[in-house]
Length: 218
Image (cartoon, rainbow, N blue to C red; front, side, top):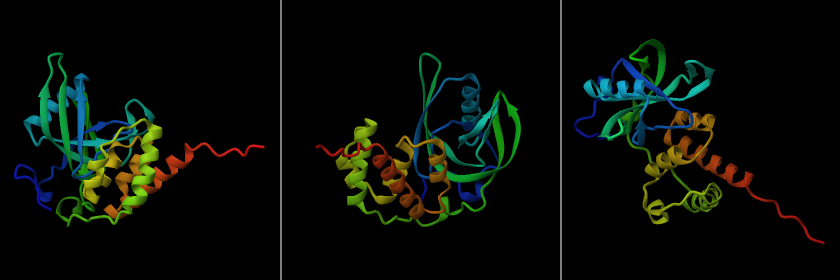
């Protein structure tokens, strides 16, 4: 894979990483995630990230608690867009780089959580060939139109039709309002083809679940 010149190589990924637990939010390698940062501890996290590797790990809570437990796998992103607002918020965009496994959690710094990140097993996220999942585009578009209609989501269908398969799978996996466990399953899919198959199954199940069965008339 070719990455922009400012991005780190796989071998230069940091051993420790600040993490942002956010339920129902998914970041995937090469995906772009806009975030509105307003809590003081996460403002501090962005300040520190900008001063160092510009890296943040996105993870999901896996249960209750204070702080909540988190799933053991997440995805690291690099801050590639940054803006300040007049009311003290940061508007950032994270570009996904590589998934990781949490080896251990460290003491908090300025209120935000940090982990030791294990990148092994995810080298292909950064160095592997960009795999193009073989999508049944007609089947996908048919169920996707029904799913979006029921979810109240508008789409630029010309952009959907023209998007490469790999980018389309990443974008849909990130924007579709699946539940947190489904989002986590998409993150942990072993390869793009498996992620594409799971994505299509989730969309189909959601579309069918919301259908009103035909009631015979007499």
